[in-house]
Image: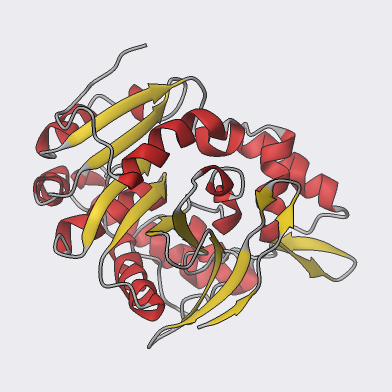
Length: 305
């Protein structure tokens, strides 16, 4: 593992840049907090990057938060040519990152796709996970089983067409930020944080660092009964933060996932799909005591809005 030192800007600690060498690939990361702080491995959402936690991490005192660029995102390696991005393949990457950090036991924090990944990681490695926190993500997306043959065919067609595809090139960084705002509904400041880490020079303009294969349809989706089996294996104290205008509150099937987790607290905050980035302080007020071990109510607490 290599690192570049953090620094203070105003009264906030800026991130250190890390490079984690795993047996199969190189993962980039950003880190905040003291080396002897509570170890928390953080995973961002689909097409985001480790900068997703730039606003939140400095608000978590006593936490050593390491935010990965997931494979194919940010500064991390991409999958080999011809390989799809399967949801379950992210989980060995997370385990390898924790091993590279020397963390035998640690807590997890995930947003969106990252929330799905950390929930599965906690399910298969309960002996290593102290606490599990998720923001707008719990398990992977699923698909109608009847769509399986169509999805597989489309995934193959997309892979075969990739050499002929020309990714978008933006004339300015501002144009890329505008595109991200339009695609995701993020505010300009929030989009600028992600875009700053997500762009690379391309000719006389800028293009995305993210692997274009991340946009492909998955060749194979897990069924909901399979996902529920993973939820039932989670034993760590778990906290799920949802945005009142986010994705999860609109999905009725999530209630069954909640019910399968033995020690889950669900909190609903104002905002959309990126509450930790758009308005980090309410998230920090929930996460700081959670990672510190302060569970005033250890039982499930479902809040409405």
